[in-house]
Length: 308
Image 1 (tube, one colour):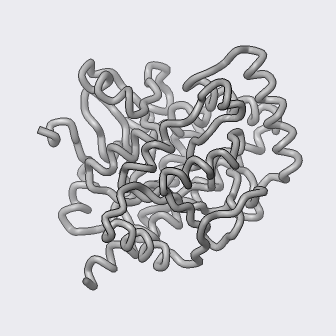
Image 2 (cartoon, rainbow, N blue to C red):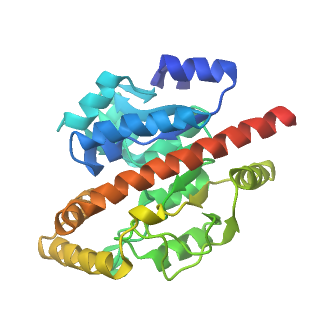
């Protein structure tokens, strides 16, 4: 019965038949994370980067009552321009599918759909986490719970810097989710290469990361892995500058009583405004960098399976 909900693009279908590595991509970054036309242009570039690095891209979305695993150019364009696309997390999937509404998948929803489609590596910008002042608002991203129970490796530039990074790491530790630094000891903070916090483990090659991921799942340890990949040095923003901008954005969100799933899009938009667009340039650069690394990890996992 599961297959009735899944619809694969021709490219992904052919890749799976041929045993080629496939990398999942979210669609919220297209519909809610970037303005048009940069969102669609970036999505296409990211897909191409994955192809050039030995894997096949599968951008995921909920369209016309189906979980689409891989999107056409027309579908990417629709997600980039439509105002009727809902932000879809775990709780939203049954409703959107049963009512045939359209949804762009968050990190959590993309992980679920990727696991249903037997895709093990997922590339995104940054994961969600524990929001600042969560001790009173209880605003904690569903991404963290999903990482605890869904067997998908998530390649990202760390957690979004609008979050409480310390509490996010504590939550992941409690849930047994390893945070691997790709060539770094410090947890990247999305726009910046470092933060005051350390990753759990540092690994310096895609092959080593693939080996650890495979070992985790062979042991029956359920749940995902966070691969924290720093933004390229030439694209990173200065830490004190971005920290000041985020504080201003957070103050405005509180003043306007913005909460729930609207918080992240509002804050990212406000940060873009306050940085005169520099944050958008950084966001695009880090997603592309994650795509390169994610494709190489997926290719390494595929090679390990062949050699077994």
